[in-house]
Length: 321
Image 1: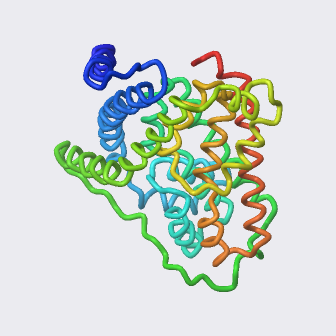
Image 2 (image 1 turned 180 degrees about the vertical axis):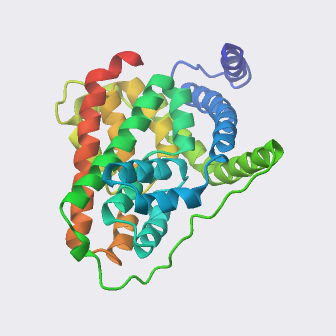
Image 3 (image 1 turned 90 degrees about the vertical axis):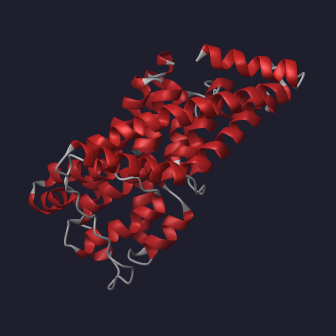
């Protein structure tokens, strides 16, 4: 990729007569280089993950969720959430469908928490931006937040906090049947087109924001409010992230730039988790089927889990970058 970087540098400095070390030149270099690198590598990774997903039958997973013991049910729910490419709002109809199907409430929350935090597009981008260690750590902790959150909700026996009626439609997970590898590859290719058609604009928008931050945001502002010397940086990041409605795909280019500017890796990843897993539109949708108290419990448990993971990341993962 060094040839790509050098080519873009030559173009900017010799054709546009800008310096890539600062201002508009730095912004353009970051945007062009990251766009080509991320969208290209992301396509290859999503295609590979799509082939792996073709070997999983969602109908069997759905049956297992209602038959297995407590912990296995929550693990399977979180894994199902991780392999389904839903944002916080699009996860809600599936969540409602699980409730209507009689799946235990705690297991459905494990799905709801994990689904927007972990998906193949986010894992691909994290791998590209930070390496496989950070990507795996993020994925495992995202699953863990969902599992523990669902177990806590089950332990509290909160079924009485469901509304008396559910008006939103139930969503069937669907079925996948393949006989040849060609069929699996076609499925993966279709998944690639579907995912990329939905996320490419968010990737580019995120890169644009990240480029502006990289080119013009003063380092001292970020260091003051979200630097490693601020013990409340993770909490602030989560509080700011909760009302934001965005996908983790859009957030990754932004946090990559923020980390480069001095923000702690845990603070940045916690901000991304909060922005993708908790949103005001999602709360409004959930309020149609959950009483306000249960919505507050869901937000509190998820926020505490994300904050804990953020501090853990700041302590353990900074040296991996």
